[in-house]
Structure formats: structure tokens, C-alpha cells
Image (cartoon, rainbow, N blue to C red):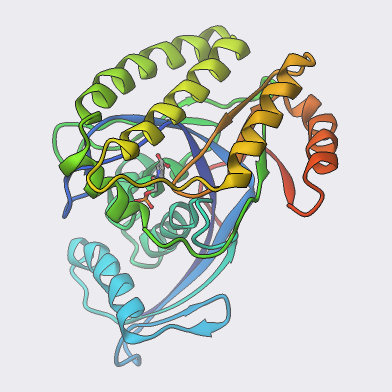
Amino acid sequence: MKQQSKARAHTNIALIKYWGKRDNKLFLPMNSSLSLTLDAFYSETSVELSDSFEADSFILNDQPQNSQETAKISHFLDLFRQTAGIKTAAKVVSQNFVPTAAGLASSASAFAALGAAMNHATGLNLDLAELSTYVRRGSGSATRSVYGGFVEWQMGTTSADSLAVEIDDASWDIGMITVAVNTNKKTLSSRDGMKLTVETSAFYPAWLESAAKDLVSIKEAIHKQDFQQLGEITESNGMKMHGTMLGATPPFSYWEALTVEVLTKIREIRRQGWQCYFTMDAGPNVKILCRYSDAEAIQKLLTTAFPDNPVIISKVGSGVKLI
Ligand code: 2P0
């Protein structure tokens, strides 16, 4: 057997956050989430299956990866191999066009691209909804990167129905700006951070109750194309997620001093009349939901205030594609 496939997947930023698993092995989440797929950050991954390979190999950003990193990929590829009934080893070559491990969700685009390439190379050709249940088991947030625009990851009841659903293509003047506060590798992974939160946070039950209500409201806002409502829910849901971490034992936070300055600046820009709303993931960087047509003007205001920090505009991204 010899097959080769290559895919591109874009990252996504959750507007209703995924924060906690109810099953750590199957990556079943504690709550449903909803995201916007971004055009500016993506991964391109090729998978070559060949009977001549003795073992899996993995090259990321031109660097051959060690046995520990390769084992993580092998475990993921096994999901596809088991279904396809093959044992063929794979050569995986991946390029991330995303600052890695900085809360910019590189694992989402990485596993979505790898899964899509493997889906094709094995000849399984699962449809996108089913593919999302496979890539979920590489990284939860990858579930949502299968589609473009606004995407819901329904928590489901089993592994088979915990999947991505396309909600809207977000073609109504939507954009996102990222302010890179610090792109170094974080000290506490989101995987460990969410586990600690589920197990110890006094605020976690309130988070679950609130996230379920926010999901209903944000879907209404998307349906009505009500940008203000969309932004207000986004901002409040993200802050509630970060609140759960302060209620954990020991308490923790991904924020840095500059993060707070950026949030203060965004509120000021909003008072000047621009519609912009912030959200943050498991890192100090700030993402701003805005009108795509306003993005350059808002970028200028942010760059003037924070000249040393990259401020990156993105339009809405598409779903996984073979390339
Ligand atoms: C999200 N994050 O919804 C949330 C918000 C970070 C904060 O999904 O353990 O890398 O691989 O399932 O997907 C980041 O967590 O975690 C994430 P795993 P993942 O985007």
C-alpha cells in the first residue's frame, strides 16, 4: 500500500468556550461550545502511508519530532487505521502557520488537518461530521475546525454524536483581531488547566449552567445577525471561563499585566463608538471580535497603544480542504 494526501485546516476561536472534559480518554466535553473559524492561522499537513516504512515518523515545522511527540500522533492515526483495518506506518509532515502554544489554538488546526489528510490517505472518506468525531480525539477544539464560519461543537451523549455542526457561514461582515501579548510556550497547558478547574473550582457548576444559556442566546444572535448581542455574549462567556480558574485550588490565571492593559484599551475604543468585543483562551493573548470593515481602523488604534505587540487581522476562515 502507498498513499499520500495533504490537507489544510484553519484554527478557530471559541466564542462560547470549551473548558473541561467529562471523559478524558474520548475527549467528551462538559459543555457544548461555539467558535469562529479564522483565515489567518492554519496548518498544512501531509500523510504518506507506505508498506516500506517501518514506523511512523513526524516532522513539524521542518523539525523531526522525538519519540514522545511521534507516539501522540501514532495514537491518533491508530483511530483511523483501526476503522480502515490497516497497520501501515505513516510519514507525517506538518507546517503550522500559527504561533505555537500561545493560546492561539494551534492544536485545533493541527489535528483537523492531520485527520483530514489521514481520512483521505486511508480511503475511509468519512463525511465531515463523522471526521469531526475523530479529530476531537486529537484535541477537543479541533472538532470545530472541520467547518468554516460559526461552528457548534455539540457535547453529545456518546463519542458518536459529540460532533461539529455548521451554524452560519459568517459572511455578514465579521472579523477578528489578535493582539499577541506573549507568544512563548505557556507553563500550564489548557489540558491540565481545564482538568484542574473541573476537579477543584468552586465556580465550575455555575460555569456549566451559564455556558448552556449563553449558547442558546448566541445562536439567536447569529440567526438575527445581531452583532452587538453576539459580541456581548462572547465577551461575557470568555470572562466567565477565566473566572472559573480563579476559583480552582490552587487558583491560577493565564493573564499578564499587559493583558489587562489591552482589555482596558478595547473598552476605551468601544466607548469611542467602535463595535469590538474581547475574548481570551488559555494564554495571555487577546482576540477581538469586530466588523471586518472596521478591523483596520481598530488595528491602528491598538498598534498606536501597543507598538511592540503584533496586532493581526483575520477574516472568516473556511473548513478543512484537501490541497
Ligand atoms: C476553546 N480552549 O473552546 C477552549 C477555550 C482554550 C480555552 O479548546 O485537551 O487544546 O486538546 O481537548 O482543545 C484549548 O484546549 O484541549 C481549548 P484538549 P484544547 O477553544
